[in-house]
Image (cartoon, rainbow, N blue to C red):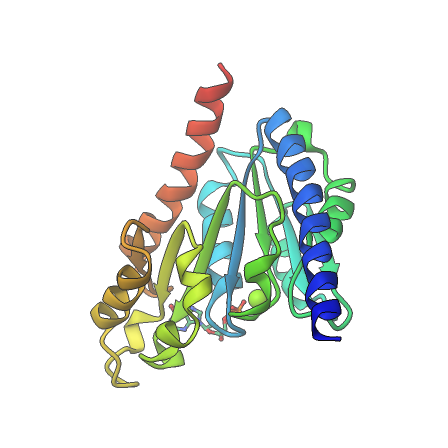
Length: 224
Ligand SMILES: Nc1nc2c(ncn2[C@@H]2O[C@H](COP(=O)(O)OP(=O)(O)O)[C@@H](O)[C@H]2O)c(=O)[nH]1
Ligand SMILES: [Mg+2]
């Protein structure tokens, strides 16, 4: 019985990987740099994305896929900024998958997109195994989640390609040292860039936005 369950799980991942690869090729063909933003509920994913959209939307064409279990609150926050936004509701699943992203992509004009931002469902565990076809895997963790949160959820940090430690403005109030959190991430993934961010500190937001701009430019450079 157990073997059966494991076998089924393996097939699900394999089918998802195949579809993710299709999404990746589709995005690449159209020169779209894409990111998958993962992290717990309330870590600041939507806020960090909003800040990036505000800073980049005059120079680049941005589209957003707003993953959520059911609501469309985040999608309406992005729409307010005037960027094409597709809500992707998972129903009861705690992660987006490549199929949901494929469907959302069919509603986006990729020819007119430089940057696609995908906000995953708030969770530090489920999204790990489900590739979406993204160019960059980002994880956002906030200081208010406590300084043991990282070592309790190693896989998402091991597989991330950019990590943000957010809400550093309230670190003292919650008795957490962001530097310790950074070292925890690096102990799991020594080469991942780790940024300390706060929505109240524009300089810190610039470091995050710069990473996105570098990704867009790198992809455009590759295409020339
Ligand atoms: N103090 C502080 N609050 C933040 C920061 N980033 C986000 N928040 C707040 O945290 C809450 C959750 O943010 P949200 O972006 O919706 O998180 P999400 O669930 O990960 O998308 C909101 O009330 C934000 O205003 C930050 O850097 N510092
Ligand atoms: Mg959100």
